[in-house]
Length: 525
Ligand code: F0G
Image (cartoon, rainbow, N blue to C red; front, side, top):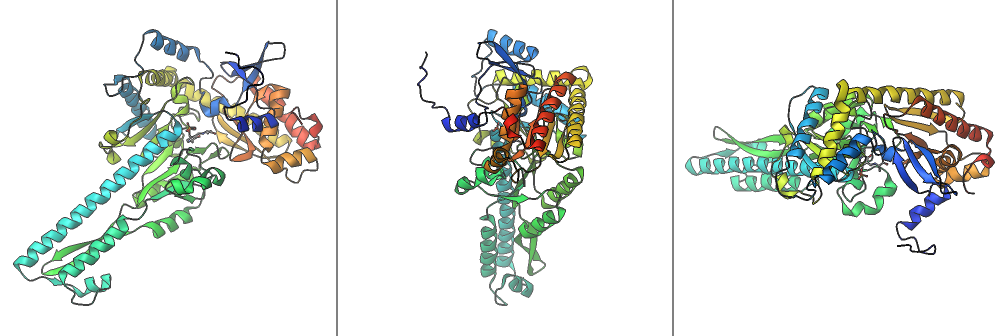
């Protein structure tokens, strides 16, 4: 149906208008490999070299032939997409294959149980929900044990005299010689108060974990998070490379449950750590926050903290994972071991919308599966495509991982060359594998009014992206929470020639900034 040219825009019209300001409101009609196509005025396809890569969802490019063939096979075979509450052997195969690779990369053999989901934020929220269920159950188990101890003391006190040690009364701020029942009541009151505390959630500054009601509170960008603060549990944000802050958090947040124990005829008091920490979320390479790899050194400090605090680590590999950095798990490259992993994006092969949350056996709670579900998760279509993606990653002794590392190094070397040529304009080049960021220096003091205005509006990177699109046929974006950084996340198919094209585009952009000549920007003014 043709709605006619005057039809109002109803699908996020404001967002489209913002994109239009930077010339990014183009329609793509086809995608293959690293190329998206749009239609020129003459109706002919115009190729656009895609470095945005579906925000990192396209390890194998747009519509990879083998993944498309698998999708077609599944549809032709009438593979059931909706078979909820039945056996899903393909999901089990996918979970087993993920386990096999994770074990190889992390050097463990502890099984990880899988809960499938549909989007990145959903997998993150499933992990946090599971971690909270585990925490609440651990707390309940500890309180039950404490209550059982109290009953033992009551039973003993009914049979023979027992005395409350003075140190107990002192510790609880009760008068010396208080009755046993008063002591029990005070211990119970304190333990209940501690149990009622909100769980401690930790996340890294600059991190991005999604924009749903729960996950947005774990995402650092205040603009996304603050308006919804009343709707979800809050995180405490940890600055990068600050082990001293981790120590501080451990001191601030740790708390002990009190238990009464019988020592001969004396009632004494003992303490045991309360499970106050729900989870610590982190990306091994921050994506949306500006392509910032976590250092191996700080990763080590985080692991130590997590062990000392008994705080589950939720490693968000939604963008960094699935081979992009040269391994299935970017965290394995910095020696980090997760209690939980979240994977999404390329798991669906660029076609299905699929994600998964994995939890190690030591933290696994079977009940979770009876209280958490999703209509669309774990369907045969997305699981089979996930299996195909893993097959492509693992083929020929893991050539795809090697290629991601090697192509990433070629891309990074080019970005470094441009930085070296334009030290006055380029602030930094960062990344791992096929996840690279190119940061420009702040232009809010630019002499060119248009460039200064773009920098002031927070849309600087979008204007540069608009120029790269219209003048060079290159698609990229800034990282949304760090708009001076352009992100490059092409597929493993990226060629030297394509990297050269990007070099010419970036050299042009840097030249424009150096010359402060916005006249040369090919975007609508
Ligand atoms: N975690 C990470 C590390 C992500 O990069 C994203 C999305 C999410 C979670 C949420 O996934 O969108 O499927 O719910 N990152 C996009 C980006 C928005 O800009 O790279 P989602």
